[in-house]
Image: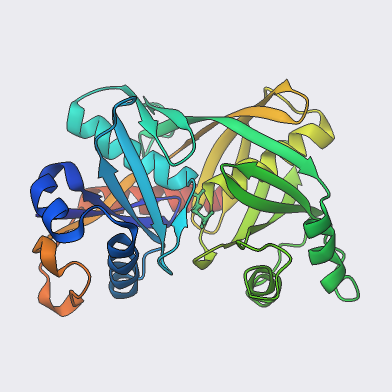
Length: 319
Ligand SMILES: N[C@@H](CCC[C@H](N)C(=O)O)C(=O)O
């Protein structure tokens, strides 16, 4: 079977299309989570990727997405992943717009051909962004570090869990991210299930920079739902609803536009790349134990080069 590696603003995933091998998957893995857990851990370890996404049939949408983090835990949602998943299914079905079922909600994905001179974009509509302000858990996280840092966290959900702090200018370094994110996802954390920890810096009125420590992964180049939670907090605080905000990160840039649809409830449109990096073939039964040295990798050279040009362009925008 053929497998693909894709990335959305540097957040990278292996795509496993179970629809292509339904019988074998059922027979071997019985579609159970334990098998997916092991496959995700092994593939993320050998390729250094952030997650593994499984493409399944859906009764209510064009396809169903299940995503597992690098540590094998299942994630309830993934914004960058949804764009990659969406592009894979759009290409597969030859469509321009589709609906995707995820663990807790349904989202649309569509092509945006004029996103950037270097790349086609993919827009997702996140229709369940919720703001909870300061909660007991976010206050406990803040308190743990208040002698050292002045981060002020608010709690958001987009099916998955986030805390967001916004500060002027200084972009937190890896040490800070690891210290706070590591604690927030440890057994001592006030968040029983762990949480994605986002630090948002205001570059100018319509430009933000976001860095994230992801639950189940660690520091990533970007986190789609993390950027969306950050833009939502910023748009609410600065009254910048229904405006396109550019969000830069260590892996590139996306655009996000937030609308308030009810108190503390928002819809966010989110556009960014979804690029192929490589493909490989392997036997389905060996996914959980494969070694990289056994594989013949087929690079998507043109897309990789185009993304490099896009990255250089994004760096010039924030110099
Ligand atoms: N990379 C993500 C979020 C992936 C899931 C997260 N690690 C979790 O467990 O909640 C994104 O782009 O949104």
